[in-house]
Length: 173
Image (cartoon, rainbow, N blue to C red; front, top):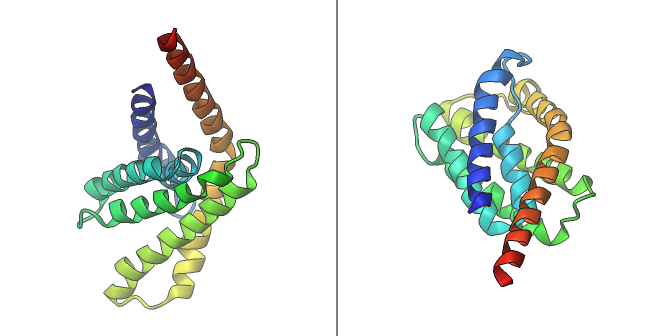
């Protein structure tokens, strides 16, 4: 229960930061994808089910506020959460290489599908421009923010697990 409430607050906080604060510190209109960081990291930390649920709701939040078509980002983030959750068995809290690798892959896949469905099908064929001006800068900016956020998310997740463990221990007595 506490995990769900804290996760909901965290999703709303990341959405507000991504859409308000980071718009003021954007580079060429590029902002880091905080919700993708959250879906990627929590899918990796918690597994497929949490990744799917968190990915769906983060994507749906983006769809409701910014897209004409509801469901595109919800489905995309759902799959990102699922595939990051599949790597949960390799989760080591102190190892940062795997989460970085998963985030880079998630960002590239998300950006590629957005290119295909939102740009290519609208007649914009210049993938070099899209990669150099949108995908690559967003990836670098997202990775920079990830380096700061990952330790904080890790500490928060460990505290949540500790609180849940203590609650279960008290209930067992």
